[in-house]
Length: 254
Ligand SMILES: [Zn+2]
Ligand SMILES: [Zn+2]
Image (cartoon, rainbow, N blue to C red; front, side):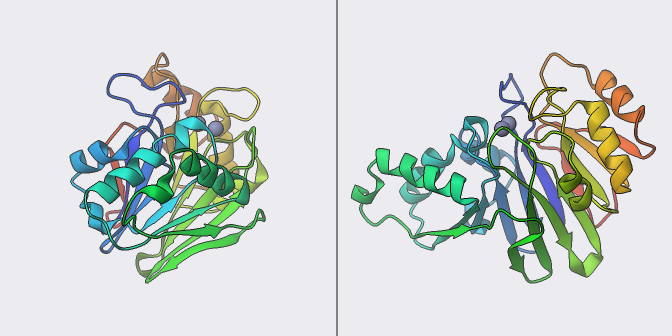
């Protein structure tokens, strides 16, 4: 199974049926959580994911719509009896703040709390973030309001690649992460400092030579048709608008 599942697709303001943007990378028996919005437990259950499959959590940056669910997620895993470690990946900027947030909750006093293994990712282009059997994830700093990483996810046995901009203005780092990717998942919060419009996402996809563009992190008031029209004005490939619980099955090439 080589899939990406969208657990949330909203920009910073969630709406009914649309949680803040966070997603899952599924490969073999692993389910890697990217960002931790609201409380992912319910969305993971609804998506049919066994919590035992989650051994890795990647945090792209320390904005509330991407990390605010982390303390409750960790507490719930503990209450559900987790014993094995959880590996947490992010920039130093992100992880020091996550740790400070956990200190405020006095987590050291939670008896029998499972081990958290923090992995600080260097703030450099093409940093090796995680390698599992047949799956390789690298990160690059992107252009947001604070230190943020985008991802390139290579499913090696099937030779498919997905890229994720996270929150970012159009930038060359995302173009390179998405070079010839089968799927580029790009934010489309709107043209403003630290963010991109759907048209700009299309421009990035075009420059990168990506095959398909998936728009995510878009405002609730914009229609799908508008987003697709805008992105298609700059991109020749297929454009999709992500919805909560939608998945990309890379094994099927869709
Ligand atoms: Zn965001
Ligand atoms: Zn952000």
